[in-house]
Image (cartoon, rainbow, N blue to C red; front, side, top):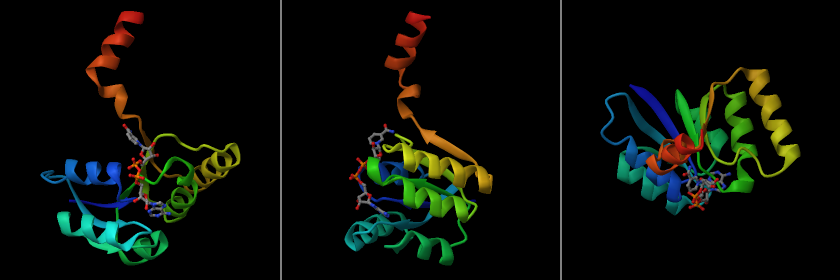
Length: 136
Ligand SMILES: NC(=O)c1ccc[n+]([C@@H]2O[C@H](COP(=O)([O-])OP(=O)(O)OC[C@H]3O[C@@H](n4cnc5c(N)ncnc54)[C@H](O)[C@@H]3O)[C@@H](O)[C@H]2O)c1
């Protein structure tokens, strides 16, 4: 069973956690949010450990992968921290909102050889698939 960590316990963090609830392949083992109440509420709903600091979570939990669902302008620091910890990462879109952040993130990812997937979920919505098919 894959051990998953979720960073950012807002709308998308909760949605990702809910989507794994009945999975035979993965379990949310730990969640992290700078607001303790947010981390504790999501942790309680999925039976995970709650953290308020990404590095602390990575130091204490043997996670296989993380989902990063922090606000748009706050992807860089958790992403780079997780890269250095050699985690597989699913990062919510957009990759970065600042070019310098983007450069630092790519550098960390290439240096550490992480498996990274962007969460461009709309690619899978029938409305967008139909639009793409109609245009091609
Ligand atoms: N893929 C999609 O379809 C889709 C849809 C909506 C939003 N998003 C993206 O998902 C991301 C999250 O959006 P949201 O609506 O869930 O935001 P949100 O504001 O509801 O939640 C973000 C959470 O991250 C926490 N946070 C901030 N910095 C943190 C840090 N350093 N460590 C831990 N937690 C931290 C905040 O306290 C907050 O609880 C955004 O980048 C957004 O663009 C993607």
